[in-house]
Length: 397
Image (cartoon, rainbow, N blue to C red):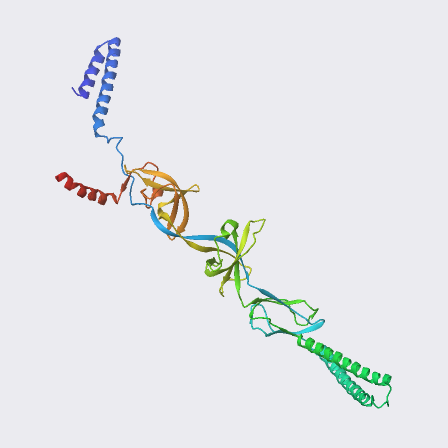
C-alpha cells in the first residue's frame, strides 16, 4: 500500500468513527510517518561518502636540507673617514688675504699654491733689512781694515795694547752686527715666502675657511686636505670578534646608495671602548665616487667558509616572528615544524635547528597548508615505481 492509499483510508475512517477512534488513528498515522522518515534516511545513507575518508588538499613538491658551503662573515657598522686629514693654516700674522686659488673638492698636488697674502708690508721690511745689511757690511770692512793695521803695528810699539784691543773689538762687533742684519733679512725673506700658502701633500680639499680680504692671525685654519685622497672605513666590531680579524683580510663595504666597495683590513685597534665594548678596525678603501668622508656604512669581513644545512627560501614560512617549515610525514600529512634559521646564501637559507638532513619538507606553497593537511607528493610516484621494480626479482624468487 502506498502513501496515497493510506491517507484515503484514514480519511474514510475519520468520517465514520467517533472521537476516541480518531485520536487513535492520529497516533497511528504519526508513528507510520516516523517510520517512513527513518526508512528514507536509512535508504539515503549508502549514497553518502564516508566521513572518515580524507582528501588531498594540495599537490606539492618536497625537498630535504642540503649541505652547502657557507662563507663565514663578521658584520659591522662604522663611519667612513679620511685616512689622514691635514689642517693647513697660515704662518703669516696680520696680513691681508689677497687671493684664494683652491676650493672644496679640488684635487691638488704637493707644493701647489692654495692662497696668497698681500706681500707689500713684508717686502718693504725686507728691503729695509737688506739696506741695514749693506751698512753692516761697510762697517765691517772699515773695522777689519783698522784691525789689520793694528795687528801689523803691534810689534813696532806705535800703538798701545789698549788701542790695538779696541780695533780688534770693533772688528768683532761689526761682524756680529752684520750677522744680525743678515739673520733679520733671512727672517723677512721667510715671511715673504709665507705669504703663499702651499699644499703639504697630494690630496683633495675637504674644507675651506679662507676668505679674500680677511686679515688672519698666525695659526688660523684655512683649508683641510685629505692626504692622497685616501679614505678608510672605521668599523666597530665586538670585542669577541676582534681576535678573528687580521691585517690583510678582505672586507665588503655597503654604501647607502646600494653599492659595494672592496676593502682590506689595515689595522686592528689595540684597545676596546670601555662603554660600548667595541673595538675599531681600520679598513683601507680604494678611490671611489660612492664613498664620502663622514658617511655611515655597513659591511662584512670574510673570515673563511664552513658547512651548513640549507633550504630554499620558499620552503621557510615566517609567522608571528618565527620560522616554520611544513614537514611531510610517511602518511603524506604535513606537520608545521618550528626551525631556527641562520645566514642567507643567494636564494637559500641556513637551517640551524629544528630538522635534520633526512627530513622531507614542502618546497613551496606551504602558506596554503594547515597543520595536519593531507597532500599529494608530486615526486612520490617515481619512488614508488623504483621500489616496485626493486622488489620484483624477490617476488619471482
